[in-house]
Image (tube, rainbow, N blue to C red; front, side, top):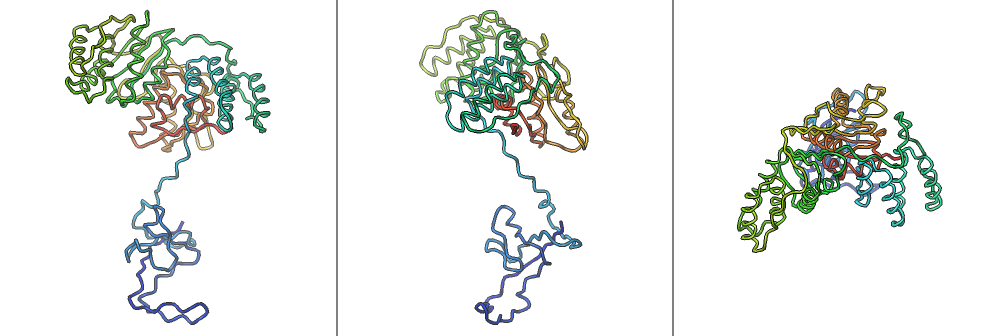
Length: 456
């Protein structure tokens, strides 16, 4: 594309106005004539790049520009040499595609699905389908179709497709089976309990992330949490965090393991100052529950006394935890592992990658992709994606064959996407099936990457 900078000057004071249409044009002083652009060129004032009105070729610039405002000419004939003063105008980023619109009513189904409980996810989606009306109901059916394709339940899909066509007078999406594409057997009607749960706290713990933690499973294996990267807690996260701590403490036999508990305790201690009633009491309640979990009755009594003095209310009594709790320098047990605090994918761990490889092959080389079932630490799946992204500075990760992501793998992906964003790269997860997209939003991945659902 050929380009040229031109300068125009406004007409001098007192210059004669143009004659009426059809009349003779008065002569113009040579100094008042603007440079003439080659045929076919359009002009845009430098200030127009932000969306201002463009100028007319050969005319005076808009009033908001100076007399010497340069004009940017585009679309000229070949050989018209550019003379750019600011090459940044050539490097404007492409427009961002529209991301996924999150719907909280699908969150329960997405969490069931992430845990491998396909039947509960189906029941939750069918309930939403029955409750909704209009376009919102049609969207719920599309989420249901994604579930059936991910599970490989063709008969359920076909029955739903007939109902969908009758309700909305339109064809259902085409059937395909993700298990078939990945070389798997279809999902059974019921699933085994999860083998454990691992979670890594993000630097900013939002209410959305805390709600996802509250919904995490506590049966079938150890619950392991890494708090070392935590730098701040959103006040909206207090209520769900208190709720989940109380649930953990009151669950007999729960195997709970923390890494970086001192980091969490320090943050809460800094937010709970005696005599400051402007502080949300939720900070105090969370600190007291943590001290119960850490089995520190003396520290609990001192904090409870400060709480009583500050708010002039009775504090909750000390109760020993009913769960089993231990701290560790490194959390890795029974195939469930978490990331270190520096967000660097480990490339190791227990990960169930069924089906196609993480990086597929395209005409220009490896296409960055995630596929199969990501269960456990997803570092091994993300390493080849990083390798495929690096050579051409890519941003797009194809998720067309990504069947399911559990809590631990989603935590890995969250930190991986945040690390890329910190380095100036906002990733795009494309062709994501809808339940996975909802779960990505529950975990908070949408805060660091663009999520686009599949259109078929």
